[in-house]
Image: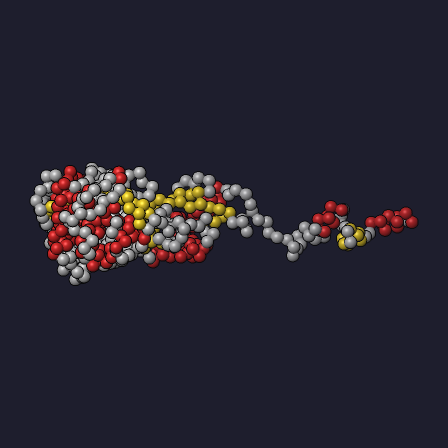
Length: 555
């Protein structure tokens, strides 16, 4: 019995101490250990633990996860369940905003989304829908794609949200909008009523854009309807323009008549096509009407908006100043040394030539730099600026030609820079339209602001000059330009032009250029024109033939 009792005592439950904790061992050490770590209770049921965290799924997405996530998103979007679709992405706020705008702002309805074959975590899909705006409808179809990712926090598969999911042309921050296409289109006409198009006149792209911007709303046209991308404020969109995705209606263009002469415009286009980086403009001195304008590089309207040093063509203005002040006279002897130092700068003539005992007319015709700069000590710093503004209407930033233009600049400068301004360097800046206007002022005796669209169209006020040259000054200035056209640096280009003509050449040095910009300005009868060939060399050889060819067509 004693032995049996001892055996019975060994079979009773005994507490065991493990690591400071008491566990009840029942049926073997394995069960006790499992219960210790919260796996199950002593009766075999699983016990709760406040320290237990749910398992987070990691690793690559399965094909099922990709297709299921994509399907859930596309189905919700197609059904118009915006909140549900947005919840299937990793940026529900941005997704909800854009998907809401898809219907509200872009007016897209009847959306059908068809997923394609996934490639890894990327799912392509096609979009078919209808854009409907104020009774005008048009079908819309395009392809897009989405990417599925696994959220780090809980391992849930979600659509990697970017605006491009909605449409591939969207950058984050952009939106889709359907409505009127901004400014109504315009149909621009030449002075004879013919239509002006980019196809017919390559140079007129910027001009036609300017006409639409200025006159689109007042020319009687009606804007078309379009679905477009409106760019938001983001690094990706900063350098991008709004983009038309679908044109629902073209709209009705208004009509704007210009002063351009079709024959002269065609000739100007032909001439600049012969010389790279060339530009030309022509005006009618008696009225200010712009008859032609062309650029070899049609992307920018250098003829109207260029800002370049005009070189010695500026001597037309400087000569008028010296004549008015009695510092020069056409047939009076005038110094033309090899060098002249002013403001600590040593100026010289082309190839260091000099004219001994020559007249001012000879210096003008040969374009002697020192003949002009030698008079700088006798001038005030603002004399040239006032002459350009008050007589030639330049540099006041008040021209209203009908499209964007630059009105020239003759800033007040001192010392060497003032001396350089007298010969069209320093801070002086012009374009062919400005310099054509200079010749037109000499021809007519009065500044008339150039214009492309008559001010009668919109009632705008044209710029005016505050005074005119005296009859004596004007007569001598015409004599200087006429002599230059016949015997000076412009003679070769002007050969065969004939009639009542005058001209002036110019070359403008530009830092970093091996060749100067070549300039030429001239008039004949009731025509005045000017041109520039950038990096072309001497104006008489480069811009001269372009201008002369146009002058030969009329008078």
